[in-house]
Length: 579
Image 1 (cartoon, helix red, strand yellow):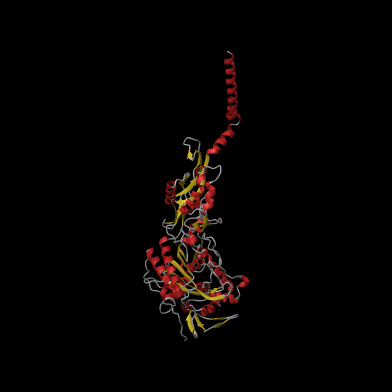
Image 2: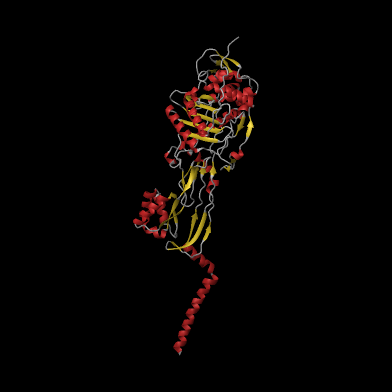
């Protein structure tokens, strides 16, 4: 009987201890112990948002999200073989050996990211090989990767992403990818769940925050036209042995940029294989003196002010002595009797300066500012340069002389194309755009076709008369650029050859050559501007850039089904005879 009582007493004491412990676990410290238990086997993973595509005007992808995977590891299962696994992954997926080794050995962790946004085929192959080698603790999760199907097509605008951060994912570095990242990126979600021995516990508590996918960015670029412009530009620069080149194609009426090409450029799928200087758009960031293309802006301003007409007679001397220097033409000549149309057709610096003498420097500066010179186009390309348009006390009579024929001021390519497009558009400046609709850029400004503004610069009559003079530039009998003509179409254009400024601020003996124009001349639909920097074949704007203009304009007219107008081109007289 005593033994029985002692036994019951011992049992009661043991049960009391268990009860006390149970009370502590479930009552007093229940939350803290539950948190500890959950934390020990809890894993939080990113649910990646799918990045929006960057599309051309026809919905063709310039940048797109494709099937991709992230590679993850359970350090408790990879720790013992970490050096071997890290060495294998560094060779297989080009991962950093030491960073991977650190993550494979991470203490008190059941989940580590090793790589993000890797093409699915590459991760799948790596996991299959790892399994064959006996490596445990590696797995994959969905993680859309970025692809640039056109390679170098519009890469100068689209930009590229950097190597994804293992935890943060996408890292935009340049172009639209960076400027419009807030629109494209969306918002990653997350999932938190319990694991045991590297596997998810099916019925355990879990928390999921769904991702919000990014939105597509619709551009005004035409991928096919962009591709063609880039190929023609590359051939032109290489044939001329130039340093670089630029092409802009605009819809005359809307200002939409249909193509904006740079050479050299880069392949967006392999950006780091190209020099740093090629990883952007020179058409937007580089400034230069436009040369004689600017003369058409001067002439339109003079006509608009009622100071000249295309028939105005100008006696052009062999050279013109001004305050601080002697002004020459690009060709040697005696006295020439040129009309204003002839000054444009022959691209006479001296004739332009003599015509511009009729206008005050400040007035000319105001006109050029209204044409968009000296200010950014603000189309959403980071790093755009504003150029330089002297004003105030800097606009001396000597400076005004040089500005009249395109020197002592600087522009970027889109600025100059938009200025010439103003003449094509009946004297109305239409702000260029690269984005369809509207989108907020990284700097906070909203850009796009919905934000397009217009203002009148010169009268429709002045623009029309300037167009008629520009037609004579491509006339084989009167002009200097017959190679810019497009068979079957009326073309208005202007050559440009300008001295380039070196690093010391002085002209260095090299040149910028260009051609800008529009077609059909009497019912303009497209404006094209071609620039080549430092051609070494001795050619000028007419012989180097003119033929490239002809090819690109001809292709674009056919591509959009724009028919010839069937009217006769301008026959304005280019010379005058004394009575």
